[in-house]
Length: 341
Image (cartoon, rainbow, N blue to C red):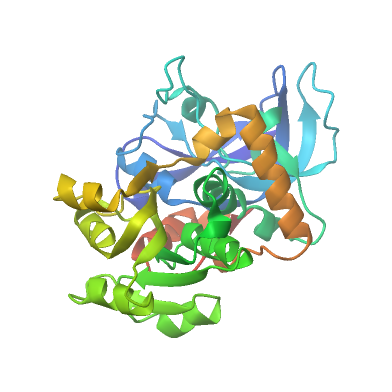
């Protein structure tokens, strides 16, 4: 039986993505085969397609790490799941004994298409109060944010959290989480064009990244003290602005690098404020079993209670996968880009 699989045969723009009609494969030991109903499109997949990700493809390469659907077959020794279970797929990446990321998992698995085979430990039960489109949108944003902002962070003792790239689904997921803990959430977007929409979905205030008075505005908003927590996906030359507007012993969590320029960081401001900088990846949360299970349980609990609910910007059909990537790269969206099969 044939199935549609999205692959790319060379690095490049969205137009390199193509749909191939391939024979269905069977899951191996401790794997499950899933009929994909919907999958999320993430910035990491854009980077992978362009050739600037931490893993490297063997062409023709598949891509995708997140999705939702129904289990249609089981590999040997799989006892936890059964055919017909509605599940969600959680992003993960393979690693070596020293903790370096490897390309093994990226070249073996993928979720872009009608079907996907994944290790059984990377799936979770779909919550009854979510659509397949919503449940394909949760893990990259919420598990990343849980690992960066909740796990071992003392979030209950913090008051102000800064979010760069505020219209991205990752930042929105983090915003929903810190608001649950009672923090003020300050959005930093490229411009103020999305200010009203960002405030409507939950941010307390919105500032512009390129505003020359950004640091002063952050200080004003935080009553002259500075923020004590930041969730940053931009990095680059703007990172110094966060350092300058942070209060002593603030924590800056970086999980992305949208700005590729160098940052001129000097040691003295870091030392004088004793600033903590943490670089975080969802893949670290996934590779540590106790942390993974704790994060998954926490997020599923909050989804079931309606505390966390993804904001979906736009849904595309699989035939329009190129347009989905173009839309994500346009940065005109607020929330998650989803593709349905």
